[in-house]
Each structure stands twice: as C-alpha cells, then as structure tokens.
Image (cartoon, rainbow, N blue to C red; front, side, top):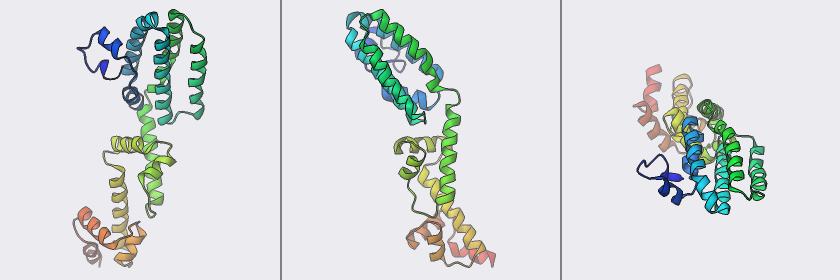
Length: 233
C-alpha cells in the first residue's frame, strides 16, 4: 500500500493493486498517533485490494495479509503493547497456511482487522504523554549522571528513534535540549542558594567540562553563573 493509498488520489485501483506492498511507516504512524479513522480507511482499502489479488494469486495474497499483521504487531509493540501480542503473528500464520480459497482468506482478514483498529485507540496520545512523563521523571532523578536518550528509550521500552520522535512531539523540544534545560535550571538554583564553586556546580548537574558548562549556562540564562551569584549577595 505505502504511498499508493490515500496519499495520492490520482492513483487508481489498478495502480494501488500493482504496487501492493504494505507500508510499515504509514501503518506505524497511524498506530503511533492514534489515527483510528485513518487506520480503518487503510484496512478497507487493503481488503478491497486483497480480494482481486487472492482470486488471481492466493499465495501472494496470503503473504501480503501476513505482512500487514506483522506490521501492526510491531507497531503496537513499539508503543508498549504486552509482549505476548507477538504471538498473534504465529497464530495468524498457522491459520493462513491452511487456507486454500480466496473467500476464506478474505473472511479471515476481515475478522482480524475488525478488531485491530484498537491499535490506534483514542487514548494512544494519552499513552504517549505517559511515556514522556516517565522520561521526565527519569531526567529529574538522574540529570546529575551521564544520561543519554538511548538509555532512557530502553527504560521506557521504545527504540531510540521512536523515543526521540515521541518526546519532541509531546514536549515540543528534543530530549537533549530538555535535559540541558533541567541541568541549567538546577545549576542556577545552586548558584543562587549555595556557596559551591562553579566547577563543583558543573559536576553536580551532570557536566564534565567546566568550559562547556559555562558556555551553556550563559547561552541559556543570558548571563554567566557569577552574575547570578553577585545578584544574590
């Protein structure tokens, strides 16, 4: 299906059917963003394309159906579905392998896809917010440590690329920038409320290089750390 479905209204049924393959990126985006209406439309088009293909080439139709199931399962696992969801692939594969008639394949696909729109459930975005809130908690607890986005992604059970995308979509800023802002806000508080040296504060908020810390502090707050200390004296 890929870029051949609704993204190009000029493509007729023959063009869609000819290009054929299921697009991971298209389905993944619908699942990830909770686009249930769009996913339902995608399924309807998929089934419409599957019927003539099954009548002409049952084995290719079976393969295409399984490709969609795999794509859906992987997408739901990426947003936090239970691990046993993966069993759906094996179960569907066993069922499909025994199918010999096009109509039976269509009935199987219609039945499964009717229940799979839950992949793009209305609260999917709320789930994304929960994931990001968990990431923020991790930052709050561990900003003093060397902390990278791939480590946080692992903790919240997402791939690094998906985590980075999700974090920016929800917060409006990249994860690295958010981490920097947390560290520099904490640094200002230490500058104003303690007598720690700049080097000590640098280490306390997770920076290893005082020069980098000084530049980042000035860029973020508009003044060097010593200016805030003088202001509170």
